[in-house]
Image 1 (cartoon, rainbow over the protein chains, first blue to last red):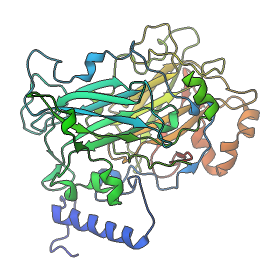
Image 2 (cartoon, one colour):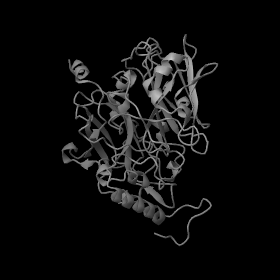
Image 3 (cartoon, one colour):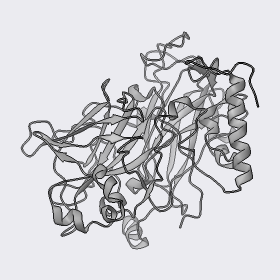
Image 4 (tube, rainbow over the protein chains, first blue to last red):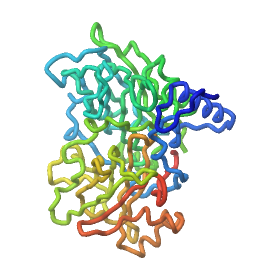
Length: 262
Length: 185
């Protein structure tokens, strides 16, 4: 694809430029025929990644003792009320109240029990409570957008919050992020540590967003999209979304796992 | 071998500062405690510019080499050593932890901090190790270090300084840090 006036000297790319780059990378991925299930670290349409991706292959390592364990979090660390992002202030936050719930498992499908899940997000107007967020949308005095919980004995987590809005960012001209919630997760091994983003079904901004599209495989990136689940709703109170998370496989032996179960 | 495909990661983004940092996050022990050392460094991009919006986490053994399984990393009581810390970089790209020196987890093993790196612009977290520089025999016998080319090995070893240890992290460029991929990743 050609664009009539190639950007130069720091001028922002247009959405068409970015979309053309995304399309070209995806076409090359399809031709290569090798499945990729994680985001590319080197993904030029996300401009901030250009100087911040390693250029050398990640070096294979077998996890050693400390890496085969994870930090331990407990009820001393997290108050159960921190899972409700709608009650942190004096009044009701503005927006669509919703429940997000799901299960955290490892690569063998075993539940990740009693581990820390942290979330953060914009408010219904697409504004973060962050001094670097200069998007001129309203701050909601009743919504901060930070929550924590521990998974239960079956690996389940559950938050009550407000659906975040999409927001503009400075990657390119008139760039908009699809609505999303950031998730931070710990597993039973430190090598399972991850941070990701959960998205909402049917978002028209998916095709335009270089962060979402940095996962070049369609099936892989759709794993980040929650599903609407009417069983999670509460009567005249909240809608509900389900999103399950798979961490990498645990390196623990089954012997150790059995000891954990005892 | 994993049977389920892991959920893809995504960047931590620019707005994690009001969510992930917490009081006492970088103080595994209070500075000035007997045995406390400072582990610190700067995170750089490919142009050599410091990265002011990165987040570093460490996970380590206790000085006796044991793996601590105590809660209390998020609500520090000042007495419990939990082995986990989190530090966001400052405007000048620097991070700092106050902690204890990790011991080797097995006799003769090289002691290290397990390190994760998150940043705006970094599409997925990175893992690395910050080895202690002191035990030359243990470093020479270490399997991972032996598998890394000579000219890159130094990026995995912290340097002694007056207060403790310095470990710079370079996401790209000359002296790019060796980042790790574990089985199943």
